[in-house]
Length: 521
Image (cartoon, rainbow, N blue to C red; front, side, top):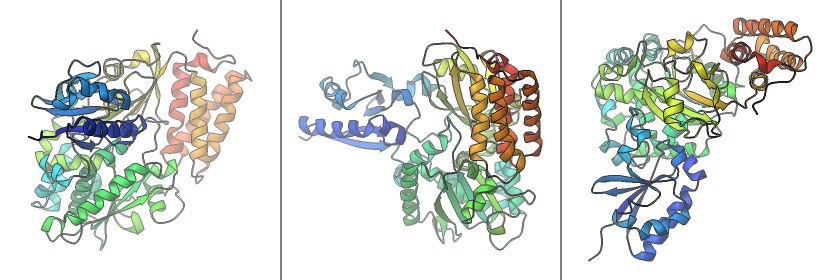
């Protein structure tokens, strides 16, 4: 009698592959064939637990069991202890039931619920895990009701500005035009961020579903995904997902047989950080050089090709199906204050357990970094943490009890941004980090406005003079004045926010701007 195949799950996401997941997959199939123990291997997205990748899961009568980090050479020994029969729980790499992993048990996974659970290109698995419920609910509503649901949920843009999504949608809905657009900003360029990529590689149909709902809500029939050019695997995955969605009738002239049309076109980005700014992105989509536009008019009134356009990032749009499926009240039940729902925190830098943690707003940065992240990878004390990407302010180790909340961080002259958290230990040179912020702005500036284009270049020069001991007090005052000019006079957030890390480094770590910067022993 032939034995029923055991089902294994292994990520095919870029990080897991970089850490050896493809070699593990080959070893698994080869070992099962050699032993005559049939297996079914499902390649999934990643759960975002990067320190455990490649994370191998096996289906057992007691649920999925996890093993990691697994390398190809570990596979024979895993089979020796009965992995193919659902045993092997005593192996050194055995982590126990997936649902009980500490890093997952305390999360509130709404947007990332399927990542790591299913084959991201399997439409049947998508539907079986709640896919299309939000779209089916939306198809029974008037546009105004869809916009009201998103507004009532408290969903704010997860791309950095945190602007209420419902207000943006309502503005577009109320602007009459023969053609409207929905644009997904997937140009994820902030250092230490990877949530958009994980979602696209692990659950692309959620983004497709969210974009369709947005189109129905505002009266748009065409969507564009502007994807970061440095994400080739995400590009391949999403292109395949689009083809599958068209073949299944989820996209096209009659979305799910409704008679309502919506199309999505995938465009690869131009490789420029500034194209993450929404108006610069629109110029790039139109085939122009990516440069920031003056506002007004807002894109919701005059955006892509001069038409009303909703621009949201990946995580904002991917949250929409849950809101329509389970209700605005349910989504708003997570979080605190004006920060509702969940946020995908991406923990990186000098940290022991880096990865993605989706949690309700309100958890403290200290809990995320010390309890979940395990502190620094070096074992040295945390000295500084940058939240919100390369333009985010730095925080000291004694400020980490602040809750993850837009307003709480803003009150500290910081920002949450896209949810990136980069950790530094006590060997970091904060003067050098401040210089990097100005140099980054100078390199990435579109050049349209003088405060950003010239101010950032002069900022690097002034910091160099300070650190060389050249009239330090005079030049520190000059640097602060330059920061004020950039904040108040820049056309967009690149020049307007590059001073944030500089100011915070000056205020919190003044000793690192001396001619001989402090160094830990």
